[in-house]
Amino acid sequence: MKESNRQKKFSRVIQKELSEVFQREVSLPAGSMVTVSIVRTSPDLNLCKVYLSVFPAENREAVFEEVEGSLGSIRHALAQRIRQQVRRIPELMFFLDDTLDYVDKMDRIFASIKQDEEE
Image (tube, rainbow, N blue to C red):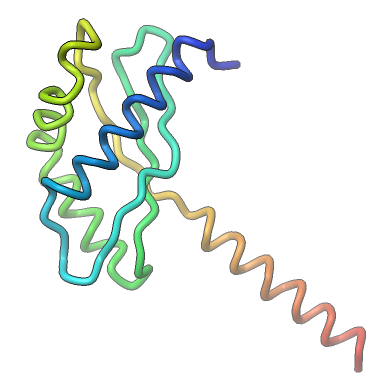
């Protein structure tokens, strides 16, 4: 199902504000960085699926557990930032974005194919 313009605008606002929340208000394991890569919003704007990209990949599970454990405080911080713009603060669901892993895997496959062709 295609997202409406309203959903897209709302998703962009949530993505921008959540990025700020992660930078300033969420304590993450040392040396870890979280990027909000995609936000998908339900048609009624009550649920946002937030896809997070974590760097470095070795800390992915620890960082994701920290984010899941701080869900209430993250949602509260988001509410403080957007309460003048929206009627209802959406529920947040976090997912790990594995796009970079997929790209890395494909690069390795193409490199091996190229190497096989050269031999």
